[in-house]
Image (cartoon, rainbow, N blue to C red; front, side):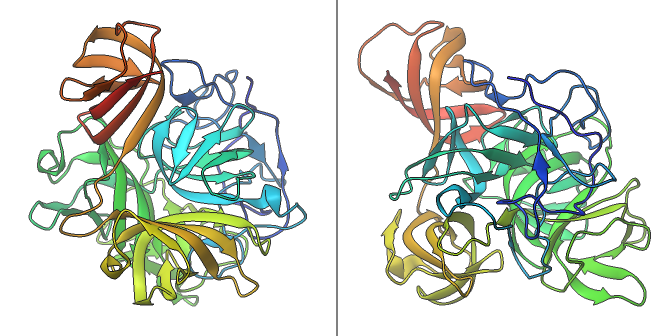
Length: 440
């Protein structure tokens, strides 16, 4: 399927319905390839688009929509200036306004939280990778079933949240510092080409997909090293906004936005933004070239919403927040652990509908990770085997798999072209460590 590419990557003068907070952009036709062994990727014709380092490229990552006279992308902005995850436009049916924000748990088509999305007809906007992989963060729009188990993706947008040099590593604290922020890792973090946190060191260049927690804090969902320094990117919650000096802070990093293009709705303390710059920071200060709103939820009341994040401001199951969005899970079915395990720092997936007050009223709440243990991650692949060498060395949907310690379900002969379902607990060094492999 052909995906039209953006003329250039930019900020949103106009927001895209379903994804963005205000107004409506226009989308170019496009889709994704779901062929075996290739993950979810674009095979669009060469055009302008953007490469993994954020610079213009002929055929790197893809983008499917454009809006406004400046050619900026019409995805991934919360244009109303409210704190946390933004709200999208209206003018669409409640059923089609479904939105899911989180990290990719599996490929085939894609799994996000509790939902398996059919992406055959989806428009794909990839900023910093050529294909969706385990751990890449996404916002997906499109209808979902009442049980939040399956959906049809209309649009899938993905971008890295951090890119630049590691400042320091604290293995004991399961975190590292970069660009003025603390990035924490856990069992859900996928390591694209590294053996884990001990493999990081100060000065290394990395690209990180992550979920914002609070000011200066993110939880990494995928980390990959980069051979050379690339244009820096930093995402986080705005604090210390000073309109007079045209600065704000992301963690301890001072961002100067005097010459930057700003998101629709402007800036406000508490708003989650993504900042790009042409140059690395100097003396704790970054000169921004672009400031974008982060992944947006629909503002259509009653629309189905699924949101993955780390709990903050926990008072009870009826009152906490995920990335600035208030959550009421008092009547939700809790899986992956016990309700009494909920609290600040616990990673969850909340599924439900938006109330008139903008509260996500959850009917399902899945615990993904409890600090100190509990709720082991589960990653999934469904598709034909490619590059088969042995049980310990094969590829499914573009993801390398080691199934040497997996439980085998069903009978058959493993070989290229054989369709399997794979469950795994970790991605380390770019390899999914399978716990179960089933013949399909």
